Length: 333
Image (cartoon, rainbow, N blue to C red; front, side):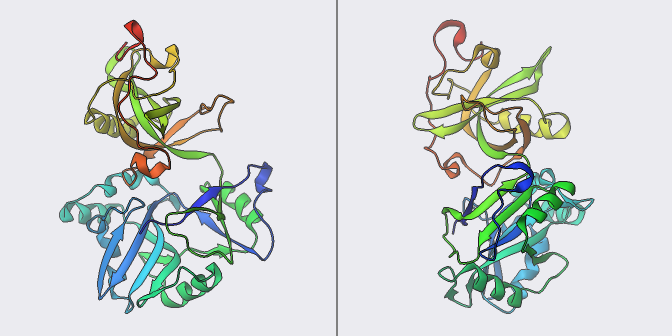
Protein backbone atom coordinates (compact mmCIF):
# COMPACT_ATOMS: atom_id res chain seq x y z
CA UNK A 1 0.00 0.00 0.00
CA UNK A 2 1.24 3.45 -0.90
CA UNK A 3 0.57 6.13 1.74
CA UNK A 4 -1.68 9.12 1.36
CA UNK A 5 0.30 12.28 0.57
CA UNK A 6 -0.11 15.95 1.47
CA UNK A 7 -0.46 18.84 -0.96
CA UNK A 8 1.73 21.93 -0.61
CA UNK A 9 -0.21 24.57 1.33
CA UNK A 10 -0.30 28.23 0.31
CA UNK A 11 2.85 30.17 1.15
CA UNK A 12 2.25 33.09 3.50
CA UNK A 13 4.08 35.11 6.17
CA UNK A 14 4.43 33.49 9.60
CA UNK A 15 2.18 30.60 8.67
CA UNK A 16 -0.94 32.71 8.22
CA UNK A 17 -2.01 30.36 5.42
CA UNK A 18 -2.31 27.41 7.81
CA UNK A 19 -6.08 26.73 8.05
CA UNK A 20 -8.00 27.71 11.17
CA UNK A 21 -11.11 26.28 12.79
CA UNK A 22 -12.49 23.05 14.18
CA UNK A 23 -12.48 21.45 10.75
CA UNK A 24 -8.70 21.00 10.81
CA UNK A 25 -6.14 19.28 13.04
CA UNK A 26 -2.40 19.89 12.87
CA UNK A 27 0.70 17.76 13.33
CA UNK A 28 4.43 18.32 13.28
CA UNK A 29 6.04 17.64 9.90
CA UNK A 30 8.79 15.20 10.84
CA UNK A 31 11.98 14.87 8.81
CA UNK A 32 11.97 11.07 8.65
CA UNK A 33 11.30 8.02 6.48
CA UNK A 34 7.63 7.37 5.72
CA UNK A 35 6.78 3.79 6.64
CA UNK A 36 3.62 1.71 6.46
CA UNK A 37 3.74 -0.78 9.35
CA UNK A 38 1.66 -3.95 8.95
CA UNK A 39 1.20 -6.24 11.93
CA UNK A 40 -0.40 -9.56 11.12
CA UNK A 41 -0.51 -12.69 13.27
CA UNK A 42 2.34 -11.47 15.43
CA UNK A 43 4.70 -10.52 12.59
CA UNK A 44 5.76 -7.06 11.39
CA UNK A 45 6.28 -5.83 7.83
CA UNK A 46 7.62 -2.32 7.10
CA UNK A 47 7.34 -0.81 3.62
CA UNK A 48 8.45 2.53 2.17
CA UNK A 49 6.49 5.03 0.11
CA UNK A 50 7.43 3.02 -2.99
CA UNK A 51 6.21 -0.23 -1.35
CA UNK A 52 9.70 -1.65 -0.86
CA UNK A 53 10.00 -3.85 2.22
CA UNK A 54 12.74 -2.76 4.65
CA UNK A 55 11.69 -4.54 7.86
CA UNK A 56 15.21 -5.87 8.47
CA UNK A 57 16.60 -2.30 8.58
CA UNK A 58 14.67 -1.34 11.73
CA UNK A 59 15.07 -4.08 14.36
CA UNK A 60 14.26 -1.62 17.15
CA UNK A 61 10.65 -1.52 15.86
CA UNK A 62 10.15 -5.30 16.08
CA UNK A 63 8.10 -4.89 19.27
CA UNK A 64 5.21 -3.48 17.24
CA UNK A 65 4.42 -7.08 16.33
CA UNK A 66 3.47 -7.86 19.93
CA UNK A 67 0.69 -5.29 20.34
CA UNK A 68 -2.04 -7.93 20.31
CA UNK A 69 -3.85 -6.64 17.21
CA UNK A 70 -3.52 -6.92 13.46
CA UNK A 71 -2.78 -3.34 12.38
CA UNK A 72 -1.98 -1.19 9.37
CA UNK A 73 -0.23 1.95 10.63
CA UNK A 74 1.00 4.99 8.74
CA UNK A 75 3.85 7.00 10.21
CA UNK A 76 7.50 7.94 10.05
CA UNK A 77 10.72 6.51 11.41
CA UNK A 78 12.58 9.49 12.85
CA UNK A 79 16.14 9.73 14.15
CA UNK A 80 16.58 12.42 16.80
CA UNK A 81 19.88 14.21 17.41
CA UNK A 82 19.79 16.56 20.41
CA UNK A 83 16.01 16.51 20.22
CA UNK A 84 15.84 17.49 16.54
CA UNK A 85 15.05 15.05 13.70
CA UNK A 86 18.06 14.27 11.48
CA UNK A 87 17.29 12.80 8.07
CA UNK A 88 21.01 12.27 7.38
CA UNK A 89 21.13 9.74 10.23
CA UNK A 90 18.50 7.67 8.42
CA UNK A 91 20.08 7.52 4.98
CA UNK A 92 22.20 4.44 5.65
CA UNK A 93 19.29 2.62 7.25
CA UNK A 94 17.10 2.59 4.15
CA UNK A 95 19.26 0.20 2.13
CA UNK A 96 20.56 -1.93 5.00
CA UNK A 97 19.88 -5.57 4.17
CA UNK A 98 22.21 -7.13 6.75
CA UNK A 99 20.49 -7.92 10.04
CA UNK A 100 23.81 -7.65 11.90
CA UNK A 101 24.56 -4.21 10.47
CA UNK A 102 21.00 -3.08 11.19
CA UNK A 103 21.39 -4.07 14.83
CA UNK A 104 24.61 -2.03 15.10
CA UNK A 105 22.95 1.02 13.53
CA UNK A 106 19.89 0.62 15.76
CA UNK A 107 22.14 0.59 18.81
CA UNK A 108 24.08 3.71 17.80
CA UNK A 109 21.33 5.65 15.96
CA UNK A 110 17.97 4.33 17.16
CA UNK A 111 14.81 5.55 15.48
CA UNK A 112 11.37 6.29 16.88
CA UNK A 113 8.28 5.34 14.90
CA UNK A 114 5.83 8.22 15.06
CA UNK A 115 2.44 6.86 14.01
CA UNK A 116 -0.15 9.34 12.77
CA UNK A 117 -2.83 7.16 11.16
CA UNK A 118 -4.53 3.81 11.64
CA UNK A 119 -5.66 2.43 8.29
CA UNK A 120 -6.56 -1.13 9.29
CA UNK A 121 -7.54 -2.89 12.52
CA UNK A 122 -8.08 -6.64 12.98
CA UNK A 123 -9.06 -7.17 9.36
CA UNK A 124 -11.25 -4.06 9.11
CA UNK A 125 -10.45 -1.41 6.49
CA UNK A 126 -10.63 1.95 8.29
CA UNK A 127 -9.75 4.08 5.27
CA UNK A 128 -13.38 5.10 4.54
CA UNK A 129 -13.75 6.51 8.07
CA UNK A 130 -13.05 10.20 8.78
CA UNK A 131 -9.61 11.13 10.09
CA UNK A 132 -11.08 12.01 13.50
CA UNK A 133 -12.40 8.44 13.98
CA UNK A 134 -9.16 6.84 12.79
CA UNK A 135 -7.17 9.11 15.07
CA UNK A 136 -9.28 8.24 18.12
CA UNK A 137 -8.85 4.53 17.39
CA UNK A 138 -5.09 4.98 16.96
CA UNK A 139 -4.78 6.66 20.36
CA UNK A 140 -6.77 3.83 21.96
CA UNK A 141 -4.83 1.01 20.29
CA UNK A 142 -1.20 2.18 20.26
CA UNK A 143 0.47 2.67 23.66
CA UNK A 144 3.53 4.93 23.72
CA UNK A 145 6.78 3.04 24.17
CA UNK A 146 10.46 3.95 23.97
CA UNK A 147 10.66 3.21 20.24
CA UNK A 148 7.18 4.22 19.06
CA UNK A 149 4.47 6.68 19.93
CA UNK A 150 1.47 8.46 18.48
CA UNK A 151 2.54 11.70 16.82
CA UNK A 152 0.93 14.58 18.77
CA UNK A 153 -1.79 16.70 17.20
CA UNK A 154 -2.67 20.33 17.90
CA UNK A 155 -5.74 22.53 17.49
CA UNK A 156 -3.96 25.79 16.57
CA UNK A 157 -1.91 25.27 13.42
CA UNK A 158 -0.58 28.80 13.19
CA UNK A 159 0.83 28.66 16.72
CA UNK A 160 2.33 25.27 15.87
CA UNK A 161 3.90 26.71 12.72
CA UNK A 162 5.63 29.44 14.72
CA UNK A 163 6.71 27.02 17.45
CA UNK A 164 8.20 24.52 14.99
CA UNK A 165 10.11 27.32 13.29
CA UNK A 166 11.62 28.38 16.63
CA UNK A 167 12.59 24.78 17.44
CA UNK A 168 14.24 24.10 14.09
CA UNK A 169 11.64 21.52 13.00
CA UNK A 170 10.61 20.93 9.42
CA UNK A 171 7.11 22.37 9.49
CA UNK A 172 3.42 21.51 9.92
CA UNK A 173 0.92 19.15 8.30
CA UNK A 174 -2.75 20.17 8.52
CA UNK A 175 -5.46 17.53 8.08
CA UNK A 176 -9.17 17.97 7.47
CA UNK A 177 -10.85 16.08 10.31
CA UNK A 178 -13.48 14.63 7.95
CA UNK A 179 -10.91 13.33 5.44
CA UNK A 180 -10.92 9.67 4.43
CA UNK A 181 -7.63 7.85 3.89
CA UNK A 182 -6.83 7.87 0.16
CA UNK A 183 -3.91 5.51 -0.38
CA UNK A 184 -1.42 6.74 -2.96
CA UNK A 185 -3.28 10.03 -3.50
CA UNK A 186 -1.82 13.51 -2.98
CA UNK A 187 -4.90 15.08 -1.47
CA UNK A 188 -5.86 18.71 -0.67
CA UNK A 189 -7.45 17.32 2.52
CA UNK A 190 -3.88 17.11 3.87
CA UNK A 191 -1.77 20.26 3.53
CA UNK A 192 1.94 20.62 4.28
CA UNK A 193 3.62 23.85 5.37
CA UNK A 194 7.40 23.44 5.45
CA UNK A 195 9.55 26.24 6.82
CA UNK A 196 11.78 26.05 3.81
CA UNK A 197 10.47 24.68 0.57
CA UNK A 198 11.74 21.15 0.05
CA UNK A 199 11.16 18.74 -2.79
CA UNK A 200 12.43 15.49 -4.20
CA UNK A 201 14.27 15.70 -7.52
CA UNK A 202 16.31 13.36 -9.73
CA UNK A 203 20.04 13.68 -10.38
CA UNK A 204 20.85 13.79 -14.10
CA UNK A 205 24.49 14.82 -13.92
CA UNK A 206 27.31 16.05 -11.73
CA UNK A 207 30.25 18.44 -11.83
CA UNK A 208 33.56 18.17 -9.99
CA UNK A 209 34.76 20.66 -7.45
CA UNK A 210 36.87 23.40 -9.04
CA UNK A 211 40.46 22.25 -9.24
CA UNK A 212 39.61 18.76 -7.89
CA UNK A 213 38.29 16.51 -10.64
CA UNK A 214 37.79 13.57 -8.31
CA UNK A 215 35.61 15.42 -5.79
CA UNK A 216 31.88 16.14 -6.12
CA UNK A 217 31.21 19.85 -6.46
CA UNK A 218 27.60 20.03 -7.64
CA UNK A 219 24.75 17.95 -9.02
CA UNK A 220 22.37 18.85 -11.83
CA UNK A 221 18.80 17.95 -10.96
CA UNK A 222 15.43 17.77 -12.62
CA UNK A 223 11.83 16.62 -12.45
CA UNK A 224 10.64 13.57 -14.41
CA UNK A 225 8.74 14.40 -17.61
CA UNK A 226 8.00 12.49 -20.80
CA UNK A 227 11.32 11.56 -22.39
CA UNK A 228 13.65 12.51 -19.55
CA UNK A 229 14.08 15.26 -16.97
CA UNK A 230 13.03 18.89 -16.89
CA UNK A 231 16.03 20.87 -15.63
CA UNK A 232 15.48 22.42 -12.19
CA UNK A 233 18.98 23.68 -11.43
CA UNK A 234 22.48 23.06 -10.13
CA UNK A 235 22.91 22.14 -6.45
CA UNK A 236 26.27 22.66 -4.75
CA UNK A 237 25.35 23.73 -1.22
CA UNK A 238 25.13 20.99 1.38
CA UNK A 239 27.64 18.65 -0.27
CA UNK A 240 30.50 19.18 2.18
CA UNK A 241 31.71 16.42 4.46
CA UNK A 242 30.35 12.91 4.71
CA UNK A 243 27.01 13.79 3.09
CA UNK A 244 28.75 14.76 -0.15
CA UNK A 245 31.13 11.81 0.02
CA UNK A 246 28.26 9.36 0.38
CA UNK A 247 26.35 10.97 -2.50
CA UNK A 248 29.48 10.79 -4.67
CA UNK A 249 29.70 7.06 -3.93
CA UNK A 250 26.09 6.56 -5.03
CA UNK A 251 26.58 8.60 -8.21
CA UNK A 252 29.70 6.59 -9.07
CA UNK A 253 27.51 3.47 -9.26
CA UNK A 254 25.27 5.01 -11.96
CA UNK A 255 25.86 4.37 -15.68
CA UNK A 256 27.04 7.42 -17.61
CA UNK A 257 25.69 8.42 -21.00
CA UNK A 258 23.94 11.20 -22.89
CA UNK A 259 22.32 14.19 -21.26
CA UNK A 260 18.95 13.15 -19.73
CA UNK A 261 17.48 16.69 -19.67
CA UNK A 262 14.87 17.46 -22.30
CA UNK A 263 15.30 21.23 -22.08
CA UNK A 264 18.36 23.41 -22.49
CA UNK A 265 20.87 23.26 -19.66
CA UNK A 266 22.61 26.67 -19.49
CA UNK A 267 26.31 26.63 -20.31
CA UNK A 268 27.39 27.82 -16.80
CA UNK A 269 25.57 24.83 -15.33
CA UNK A 270 26.56 22.14 -17.81
CA UNK A 271 30.24 23.09 -18.16
CA UNK A 272 32.38 20.11 -17.15
CA UNK A 273 29.31 17.95 -16.40
CA UNK A 274 29.16 14.19 -16.51
CA UNK A 275 25.69 12.88 -17.35
CA UNK A 276 24.31 9.85 -15.51
CA UNK A 277 21.30 7.57 -15.62
CA UNK A 278 18.34 9.50 -14.10
CA UNK A 279 17.51 7.09 -11.29
CA UNK A 280 18.84 8.63 -8.05
CA UNK A 281 16.32 10.69 -6.04
CA UNK A 282 17.45 13.34 -3.53
CA UNK A 283 15.74 15.96 -1.39
CA UNK A 284 16.62 19.60 -2.03
CA UNK A 285 15.63 22.63 0.05
CA UNK A 286 15.24 25.98 -1.69
CA UNK A 287 13.76 29.45 -1.43
CA UNK A 288 11.18 28.63 -4.08
CA UNK A 289 11.57 28.84 -7.84
CA UNK A 290 12.37 31.47 -10.46
CA UNK A 291 9.79 32.39 -13.13
CA UNK A 292 11.62 29.90 -15.35
CA UNK A 293 11.09 27.05 -12.88
CA UNK A 294 14.66 26.89 -11.54
CA UNK A 295 15.27 26.35 -7.84
CA UNK A 296 16.39 29.44 -5.91
CA UNK A 297 19.43 28.95 -3.66
CA UNK A 298 19.01 25.14 -3.55
CA UNK A 299 20.75 23.06 -0.88
CA UNK A 300 21.16 19.29 -0.74
CA UNK A 301 19.28 17.69 2.17
CA UNK A 302 19.73 13.98 1.65
CA UNK A 303 19.45 10.91 -0.52
CA UNK A 304 15.96 9.44 -0.80
CA UNK A 305 16.74 5.74 -1.00
CA UNK A 306 13.06 5.03 -0.35
CA UNK A 307 11.94 6.74 -3.57
CA UNK A 308 12.30 6.16 -7.31
CA UNK A 309 11.71 8.73 -10.08
CA UNK A 310 8.33 7.11 -10.74
CA UNK A 311 7.25 8.08 -7.21
CA UNK A 312 7.60 11.79 -7.97
CA UNK A 313 4.42 11.96 -9.98
CA UNK A 314 5.89 12.65 -13.42
CA UNK A 315 6.71 10.38 -16.31
CA UNK A 316 9.44 7.82 -15.91
CA UNK A 317 12.67 9.43 -17.16
CA UNK A 318 14.36 7.76 -20.10
CA UNK A 319 17.59 8.21 -21.97
CA UNK A 320 17.62 11.24 -24.22
CA UNK A 321 20.05 13.61 -25.87
CA UNK A 322 17.76 16.53 -25.09
CA UNK A 323 19.42 19.60 -23.59
CA UNK A 324 22.77 18.88 -25.26
CA UNK A 325 23.72 19.65 -28.84
CA UNK A 326 26.71 18.64 -30.87
CA UNK A 327 30.27 19.72 -30.23
CA UNK A 328 31.25 21.19 -26.86
CA UNK A 329 27.64 21.18 -25.65
CA UNK A 330 27.65 17.38 -25.28
CA UNK A 331 28.37 15.12 -22.30
CA UNK A 332 31.51 15.79 -20.33
CA UNK A 333 32.14 19.16 -21.99
